[in-house]
Image (cartoon, rainbow, N blue to C red; front, side):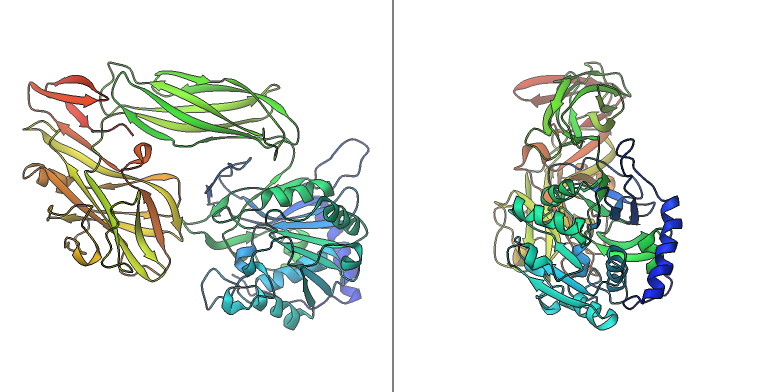
Length: 591
């Protein structure tokens, strides 16, 4: 990163020069025309994710617009009816100080950026109100010390480095409250937020020249997109917040890209800035999103798999959509309903759940895959979005036992939990153990490939998860605890996966160890652990076997002995598969 320049409160001569520069910059910025004859508001993205990113949705609803690159993180906009607003999903990175954690406030970056934001909003601004009403979270307040992970150090940097007077107040918003200030910051209002009357007062104040900053964070904990978007709608802004999280390089904190060709980016004078737990922004107007609640399922030939799909209207008006499907293997598929009408974004009817049914052909070979794509299209074919799911002709073996152990609860058995943790919860280490019975595989079969699959439903900061062989099968999930867990060699690693994105299936190749155990007692025990170098509070959460649709499993590919016959039981129906010198994938529970 280039050295970041610092600016004090801008003198009048610099203000004039800056305004002249803005005329040139706006000429090359993206503009949106509301309608012929009306003022065209100028809107620009000045911080984005860069070209390599992962779009994450931690909790419903899904974002209206999905990004593969350059997700907008901060936007500035001159409003058609007067005034300016800056929106950004970066509040998390204003907390604490960087010496407390790499994802907290770095002096010389965000304080510099907010100085540039304040000066763009209102040249010569000195008086800033950091609003702490509206149920603002304690750590988002500048009245909360950095030692308590609050934003006080950030505010102190703006005071000391740039001469701002940073006020905080939690009173009801009135014209009298706002009148003395140049800039108002709303640092992630939370439900119920502020009243319609308070929003109207803010709009009037912005129209009169007040500068507004609206902040939010990812949907990992709390995302306030509905409250924030209500304010943006009242302002007539053409951008909106989304309910999501942006990751880069598998991490929720990263160096984001600053566009120095924009008015605020030019003042900032550097091409990068650190952000943490950021949400994205989108352009308002018409959009739709399609999202699978679980995108991977398996079943035997002849079985019908069902997928639940969430379709969300991101537009400002009610709209009808048609749902169509396509696939790679030409399997029978049906979507119901295929025609839906969704209410405007933010309404109770903006989201609908539809069901996709996929039938695996009776003659399909085990191990065959199909990729099915579902597309939602508006009536005029202008608005569209697609998402894909996977169908697998297979059977899986689910564990007879699965459990996690916690060094913070060394003598507690956690076998009744429907989840497994791996990593470090605060300073405490957590490992998981799984046991599988291979007796459903025909005697004499030759193991070709075995993979362990786990559904991750949550992560914190991400962690590498390593799979180890466990020779002792004498443990059970109802007895095991940290101080009485089977031993294993921490250096004997079968495979590893870096787990950083929730709502996703992760896999580990455990072929050789399973083949060895199949030749022996036909019982497989595995341990999942984080590396010894794992930092505090880096962990991953997985579903245990009690969650039927998300249960862990191993998928076993083997060559059956000539003429071998395997009797398989599924939902009370006996299925006979004759395998003659063929490759067969055995599993014990549809996933």
